[in-house]
Structure formats: C-alpha cells, structure tokens
Figure (tube, one colour):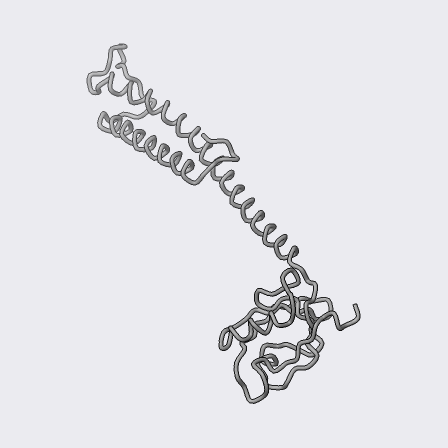
Length: 205
C-alpha cells in the first residue's frame, strides 16, 4: 500500500481488484463445502471417532482452513481500501484548495492601479451597452495594463484591431474592480466606443 501522500486512484483500484479475487476464492471454497453438504463447524468424524465416509474430509478441512485465512485477508484488504479512499479524498480536497488558493493569489496579484479615466459616455453607445460609466477608472483594457502601458495609443490600437470582437475591460468603480466586455463597432455616434478616455495622470491622485 502506498503512503497517504502518494496514494492514487490506480492504487486503490488495485486493492479493490485484489479484494474481488479474495471474494471469488472464498466463494469457490464455500462451493466445496456445499458440495459435501457441510458447513464450517460440523464434525468431520463419526460417533466412533472415525473420519466420516459421506464427505471428502481432506477437501473439507482444506476448504475450511482456506476460508478462515481468506476472511482474515479480506478484512485486512477492506481496511486498506477504506484508508486508501480516505487518503484519495483528502488528496483531491487538498488539490482543489491549492487550485482555489492559487487562483485567489493570482487574482490578488493583478494590479488595480488605473491606467486611464472615462470622463464621458454617450447614451446607446457600445461603451454604454457594456456598462461603462463616466468617472470609471480603466484598470485593464484587453492586454494593456499598468505594467505595459506606454500611452493611450496602446488602447486605441487594441480598439482598431478588435472591431466586432469583444474586449475584456477591467474598470475600478469606487473601491470595486469590475470585469466588463466591450465590443468596439461602428454606431450612430462618433468613434467605435462612444466614450472619452483620458490619461489617469491628469487626475489628482
């Protein structure tokens, strides 16, 4: 049996397979007793102390001994399977917790520092439909964020290359960071977004 920290589904399945083999052999040994019309406790000698002639004494004695051994093996195997299942469940739980923790750390590691500010949003525009409001701060526009922004032209480039395709925009509204999807496209007003974005540096920090 593998130790708990390296237990795998395959190792547990191997134990279950071994248990099934034990059960099959127990059934075979019990069939021998049934064919002799005898169980596990009846005497193997007659009233005079001689081996009974109505049964195969050697065969019955061997089957009884084997059943006892197999039952002990079966009990031990069931205990190993139970331990394996508990360990496997614990490992899966730990993996889920680690994955959740990793995602949480990754999300928290993402900067919430604004790169621009929205100072105007036209009604019925793509920006308005996406849920962007005036005075929202842009934290991330597509692949552009505080770590790689050189100028607002970077945002303009993404807009020009994303016409008709959704762009993920993370905005900061008060103390909340919200993830929105904005699709640049021609509409009845000017531009492809329908909002005005200004550099964050122009706002008092």
